[in-house]
Image 1 (tube, one colour):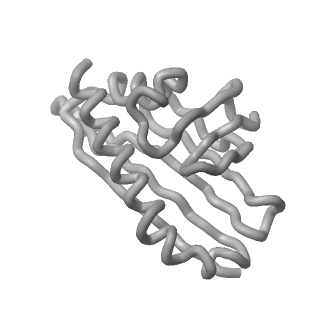
Image 2 (cartoon, one colour; image 1 turned 45 degrees about the vertical axis):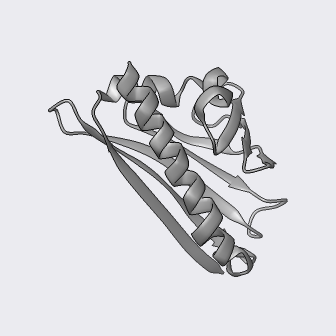
Length: 141
């Protein structure tokens, strides 16, 4: 089974609480988020949510939802093993008024190799664009 990983990060002059507030204010995603267009549903560990990302709709399962620290889900295209992605957002607090926001995804499945170039280019660019906009929004608060 093919595997691929994307990791991006950005330093933000803000508190973990403010970054988390922007990250988890899902109704506002259309106003600032260039990558994830929407997240709907009750976000809690074990629940499935609806996410619209890069023109595709997914129903991932929430794996981790730790306030001000980490939000993680896993989703599959059609069925498990074809093209799976474990997407995560992490906030590292430096206790000096800054944090590092990390957004990454671990991909696996038989179609990963076929999508490798798109993941390296378009998907990674989407993560970076979202990170930059999250930084702008969090630093405004």
